[in-house]
Length: 205
Image (tube, rainbow, N blue to C red; front, side):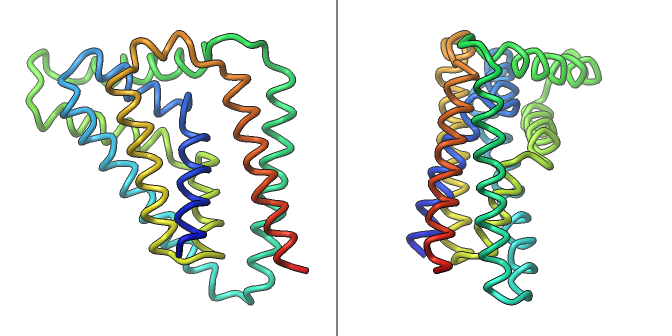
């Protein structure tokens, strides 16, 4: 259980920092009460985590050795891809992710009434973050972790990692938005995925 918790916490925290959903949460927190944005964002990420772990549990119906090989190969692929992507980036703030997040928030805000109720703000944060996170590499990584580790540990670790990132976005979003280096975060994520891939291959010996 502790292995799944630690792996999920580390992977999610590093991968989500500077992600599109991070910036969505940060932008919303600049426009609405932080508490409401945090509730909506964390709720969306928690639901996404539970769904991902459930998908991972379905994969456990396969022979365990196949699941472990798939997890290790998947993490290796993610790691190599992220390191390659990092080498193509300049060491500048994550402008592209911020622009996508701002566009998503602007479109959603245009559909809401001028006077936002508390429920509308929470719902907006939930919807934007949930959609932004669907199909993201952290969701796939959570599925892979849940297929090879204790589901409760993975669930708790992933939710805690998501909560840490969401809290940072809400509290420090304005300051961090212009300073997070996409290249550095991508490189750190790639290295972390490679470490877990190496651990996975080692355990298959």
